[in-house]
Image (cartoon, rainbow, N blue to C red; front, side, top):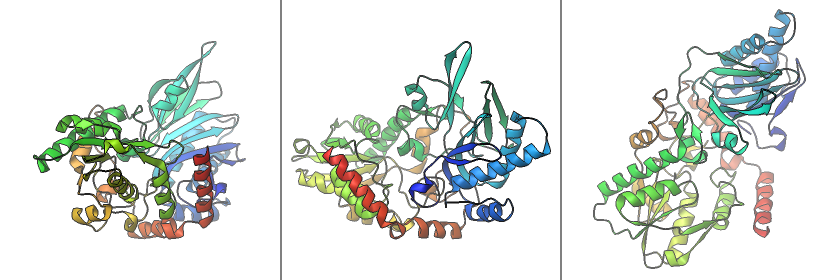
Length: 434
């Protein structure tokens, strides 16, 4: 789920029957979900059956579409859809990339006014002169399905494909501007994807180059024997860092591909369990060597701490750690599960204290300006990024201390349900046995 709980009942897509059969899937988070929920229940008189903001957005869209249809006669038309979406933009704040299926109407997609979460579409020849359309978060999904990339959905734009296969577009928020989430490039996206016409792979290579330059500035007389990635996301950055500092690149850890990402797991105990079972060291690559490990980012420090310990057990003389991202010190409210500052290893700690917590001989972070420079390249329409996890600046301008406290209470480790913890342990054990 996005904002809300972890119940299976909150899995997407959500569905309503009125004014049409409408199914909605949503990537992101609404920052005004509480106030909106009250208005939807009391004003729109619609019952919300979960704590998910995706269901909330669906009901806002359905209500506005119903209102628009009552004000005009006839069948559903693109102008009805766009008018309803304009109302959604007026009422819903935050980050959202949304896809909607309207039974008997068509497919709708729209993206938040800051373009925080990615959304792209493509086309495929369906024969007889017609086309198929697909909307997705990453271009790689279009590649796999045999679609040609058309373009990114612009911030504040809605695209509607009617049942006849005709595409309609409208800019539904005239004040929209592009501030995509930079963490998509750091960690979330696949390296073979393009987001807002920017290659994820090339940005990660540049992250490694900038990080290598910073490393040489701080440690011109280093004793590093080998550079290793912490699989998989950091591989491109590690390769380029090794090239920049003139040191051999080696693969020292093998990843169990049946494990999920550890930093988004619901409890710290499970994250520790999973790190031990996700990565296995190749001891001969560590024996009697000074090793520089490269990770895409350091969130809670769980993975880093366990991996540094494993590297020493494998025989490394010294273990250094470099992060392709700056220190993460602030919660994310736009769809990434980083809700609680006290769970972040960099919060209220110096670099020396972080190093001590992780157990490394030293820790090096990317500078934020260098990270931005790594991504700010090929698309002139993108001049800024959403970087709140690094600097605490939220581009929507509506993130209050009360909202951050509320998210902390709902989403920190203590608030996680034991039932889901048990379920994930079962999943992990099944993955191992498989």
